[in-house]
Image (cartoon, rainbow, N blue to C red; front, side, top):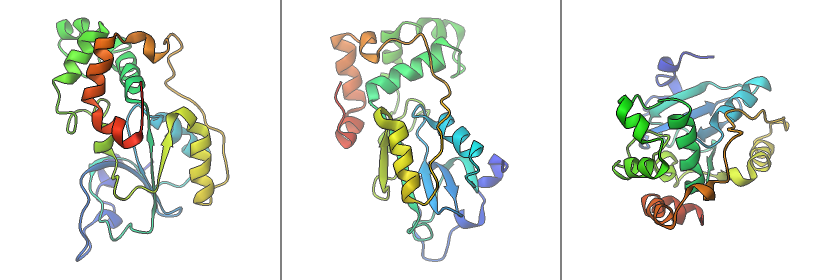
Length: 214
């Protein structure tokens, strides 16, 4: 696997004369298969990376974080991302990053308090949702929506992944799921009417852009 720090300096990520830059994104890129994947945290990222690696999909930029890419250089690359119901995604983040471990490096007192889901909603509500940690940032801020060719929906994840790879000429392969929490209830069980509405306001742009409902 290429060195992550070096990936942001890959020759095809350097500025070409006259090529405008995009904003910063978390990117996975294959020059052989000519695709760019805008990685959105908590949307099957570990699963897809592991499945690509297991099935020999050649990746030149594996897990570059917060980098720009020259739009003109990559204009004919197929670009995709995975999106998820924002209410579901936030519950998944809470389980994985708060209940399972202190992934955000919070003070112990704060971490204990956020084991209460409404308190975690309070915590997220205080963030600049466009520029915070990618696990809670808005999905719209993590995808170049002007350039993306296809959005895979987590609700039909395997079907969506198969569609993308058929389109770019990669033979279908099995998806090896990771990071599933077996004790999780359905995401709707974690919400009151109040927290449902608050999260709806926090992620209003995602709900509108990707046509999600609670």
